[in-house]
Length: 153
Image (tube, rainbow, N blue to C red; front, side, top):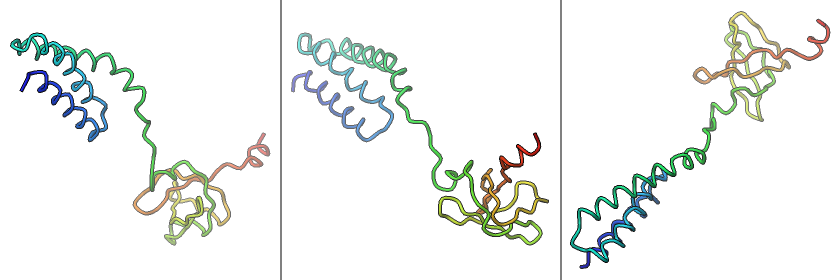
């Protein structure tokens, strides 16, 4: 088997491996094998030079494309439970720490809730903001109503 076919197999292996990963790194190692394959067609006996070409080309390709791959990485998005943090909700059952009760409705879902300040009692119908999640309860704080702010000014 000619040496160049070995380099082609190596390039194909890393291309397939890239499909199985999400890092966009392994492909450059496979592409780096292609110049080594071309060199091996003319100088099949110089295996160490071929390996050196492969390593250098792979490193150069990785370094040249690092900034590009950093730019195309998606920003993490909160999902599931944590996606409701920061959203507005409406109290549908009084939030009272002494009675250990309270429910809110956010996006059509009903959540058990407790006040950010333990002493607060938040009546039904109040607009609140979800601050965090503790266990299975949403921690909320009262929203300052615009009419309240205007009355103070």
